[in-house]
Image (cartoon, rainbow, N blue to C red; front, side, top):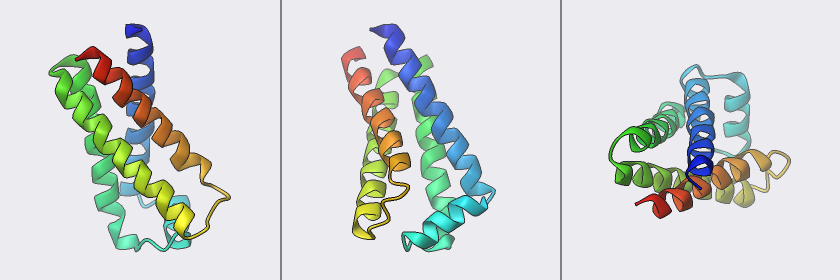
Length: 117
């Protein structure tokens, strides 16, 4: 079970770190998606910071205090619950698979992290 925890958490870290970089670089695809779901583009650095902080917290939880990793996974899970809710609220469903997939990995990291405490 420990190997599954490591693999799932590493996937979550890499995915969220990559997303944070895309947010900070103001990638056109990210801007288009935010516009479509009616999130102001000025929020990009804040959303990138949240994803980056989640990735850093998960990394710290792997190598240090596990409760920090659990807290980061909980934060990312909440973040992506909100992202899915925004997609549903605005009825932008053609790309909802991305926030759902990120939510699944964050929730799995949380559940597996809780078993490691």
